[in-house]
Length: 364
Image (cartoon, rainbow, N blue to C red; front, side):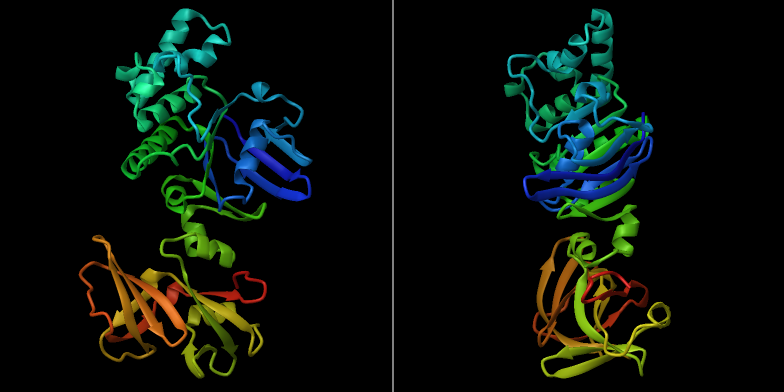
């Protein structure tokens, strides 16, 4: 296995900067996911690591060696594409064996390597079939096996599960993660699905408009987002955002709601982090849905609102709450059921409160 480093990497397509001065290190044996919306630069970054795109500035290193001028074939990486790219005239076995045969590997060793990876992925029974006779899930397993059989330094995967049905995706997600943990394969994986990223990654690198926004463990980016983009992109439903202004006198925030103002006193842990902020500073208070608590009776440090919609999802209930122009969401257990239209009171979990500068959008 190997480490991968991007040093101030820039990639342009005409006047468009697809990757904008990205600095990133993927550790040996790490499963790192490049996450972001379509067009954010994540696939271009992956293709640059593979050598399929030439970078305009910066360096790409594999195990400390600069590989900018190395051909893709000389970088010892395996690339698994979103479209499986299987040869339709070859059986599953021969598709997997193909990269080994192009290296003129001994026939017996080819057979042994293919059968080993087939056993690992539990696809030995489909070896005789051609791609058109395989399900989407089996085609994906064959594509993964073809990448794995080479035993490269690094695996690169570009949204490999996006074409699968929901249940197959969940199964393959767990299978991929199990294989990576067991084999400690350095893996760079691209997806736009934040649930997939949270479930699989050792670390997540979140990109937007070619710029790296935050790198951290799934827990890091969920609990302590670096800015509003990360806070909004990670989580389903995403974080609630409440525009407000800092009130120095009360060490709280003033929340404007349809001509009136709700004064919300910040807990001690938040006060300490914003002690140098000026009175009146425009802020956004962020709170995850699971940190919004609903009460049927008036409570201290709470404010009243109306329940306008409930989504019963089986494992949880999603409540949509509104007070004037203020709208936010609460996630509760399925046992918590309230009639739509009911007036309720809301409190916020103090440890879950995050504040952002409304102008810079950076976390405070």
